[in-house]
Amino acid sequence: MPHPILPTSALALALMATAASAQSVRTEQNISLDLANQIAAHTVAACAANGYAVTATVVDRAGTVRAVQRADHAGPHTLDASRLKAYTSASAKNTTLAMMEGAQKNPAAANLVHIPGYLLLGGGVPVKVGNEVIGAVGVGGAPGGHLDEQCAMAALAKVQEQLK
Image (tube, rainbow, N blue to C red; front, side):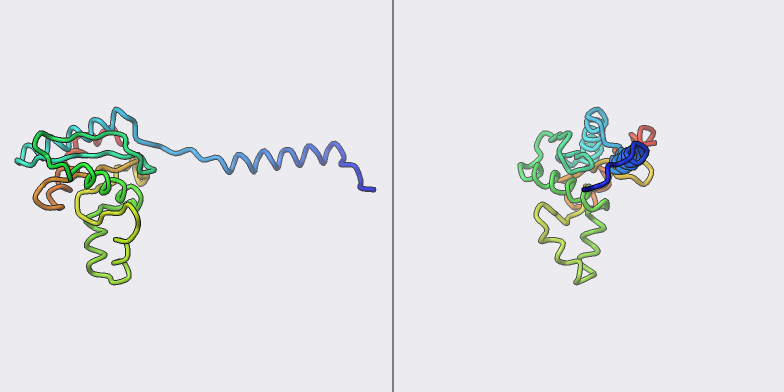
């Protein structure tokens, strides 16, 4: 016959279980809809100032779309390109331009192009608060991924005060 648990042992077990469950709950920062809309608008405006009709997609930390803006005359392909760049950047917590360059130089990284949903073209930039990635912006439509990235960086500079 098993020994009954003494009341003090039951209390100790309950306290340990509570401490264990508290350690398994995480608090994470994420991008708000308002901030996502601001970043998308600033990105499209930055590219428009340089004569580029683009689409900007902003995703949250999990890669889920939060905001999309497509400039007049932006090609239809820019919708998917911007979304995939944003997803790739949020997922890898890196710029897609850096990832593309790394894959070109390192044969072991070349297989990144085979990950479903990844697009290794410049124009995806993580949105960070300190070192924590809370989302990403992807841009498609400028005549080069490096120019897409410049528009994204200009937009992030406009909202920098909100990312502290």
